[in-house]
Length: 464
Image (cartoon, rainbow, N blue to C red; front, side, top):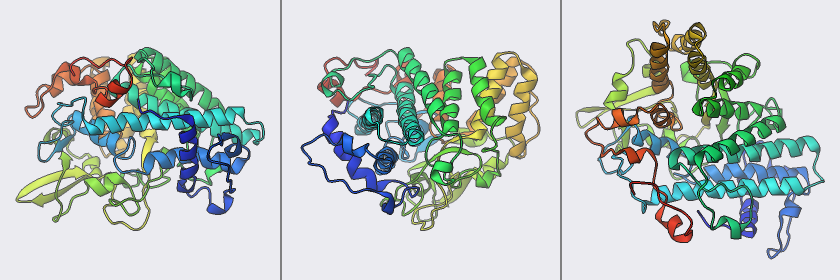
């Protein structure tokens, strides 16, 4: 994995403090000037302001570079690996499922994820060792860091399978860590999320209503998803139910409002960082939206477009099109603020309430509660202008849920790619696409060549 030591990591945290989101103003920061040669975590976690800044810097780190782990790449890589996005010039190894271990983008993805995990571990250690913070502040910040680590591991384990499980800042141990079986990684994710759920605040008071830092709902949302993935049906329903029934903080909204900043459907969003591509809003809006002057890179697949039912308003609201060289190209249009937008109107939506309805629908169906599953599916279908589902038994309900998830979560944080894999349908569907060089071993990405060279205890995934 990316080789990072604790001293350098703490310095990085300090350098990112000024990149935090607007929920903390510059006036709130406390200047600290410890010697660079000393370990500075004691100073960072001495008071609430600097501890909060160090914690929030995790999100700034994640969003500060175009094409980093959660800043466009999860969506773009997974969308191409699946059957959602087409690489317009057929040159992308993700699109053709022909990745190699020397691929720089895979290496950066892995390295970015582990740098965020190291950062979270440093924050967890600093908060755990601090005795000078207000207890409620310490709990919130500790919950955020633990949740953040679980979030990163969720995508690592789903993209790479067995991965090194790093939960401390001991460089000498971590640089030669073995891959941990994915079942054990999942158990650690579950343990972390339960712990975070108990620590995090219920609402958004700590960010003055902004939904750009995790609260209890974010931990619950990921917990529901993980329980679904590991087939804990009863627990998946229970966690999703907390967000659907027991919380007044979330509700389904009009399709055009779903991805606006602080939408009521939002459970957790990431604050976008400006770059050469965006000016203000999301990388996805800047990269995906096309016009007559565009040089297209990624467009929506014909198979995805054909999967919309007649009358589905999501095709109107979430799909754009443009004619280039006499060819109509369809592009993702969930985020509507494109390149050069100067007013911040959208944040990256990571978790939203619609997913919880479809998690609960699937969990109910797997437990034989067909009427309950129908009710949840219909909430999503009716919002899109579609009639109630005509599925009446478990097989047809599960097919309906898979179809609904394909449309509802198209080109959104890797949902389709992960669904194809967990439902064991990737091989059948992707092997039928002529442009893909699909092999069953493509279900997992390669361990980066650089990581194998740096750590003799790492073993490559089959097929690479």
